[in-house]
Image 1 (cartoon, one colour):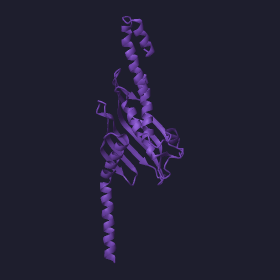
Image 2 (image 1 turned 90 degrees about the vertical axis):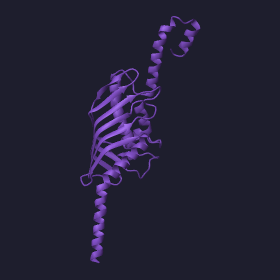
Image 3 (image 1 turned 60 degrees about the horizontal axis):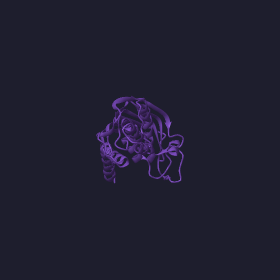
Image 4 (image 1 turned 180 degrees about the horizontal axis):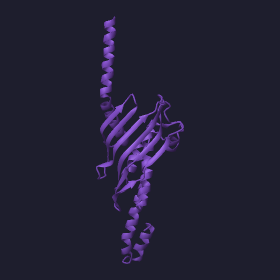
Length: 255
């Protein structure tokens, strides 16, 4: 009997040790797969390190590729992410003491009628029709799965963020102001499936400010409007050489 118990104990130790040793690699692959499905574009993580007993996770150098039909290789890269889980967490509510994104580099690019970062946000948005505004407030919705875990982040920070702008009207790299948010998702927490989209919106709002400071607008409607304004400017020089019927046609087009 003692031998059997000894063998069982050794087996349990081996299983636990194997799980701990291979946990980081398995989790890294799972996160990459989940992120790729959510963003609908390839995602790679260079290094994933965890301390299960302390509730710490560190991720280094994440690359998120651009959606199709954009010329730059990456939509954004992240140098370092650190996460600390709180002892207040339960099966239904995940509480993080802090979540920090350090060294984000976003690339803002537009093609004929799309903006790459807006496209990624649309991919992240839950398809259930749940209001993102309610999700940000932690309010439940009828269409939301009752069993889905929710998330609260006590300290959320985005630091050392930069924005590379590669558009028809401006090219350059600008610094984005740091973000620091306390008790993100309180009081009831944000559904886990909404967290990615809500974090992306926070980053995009900061990016929007920097883009507007450069005289640009972050949005597909604004891109189309910019193209219209550019076309109007090019046509101004032609109006003097157009007859009355052609000028009236341009006015009807809003040009």
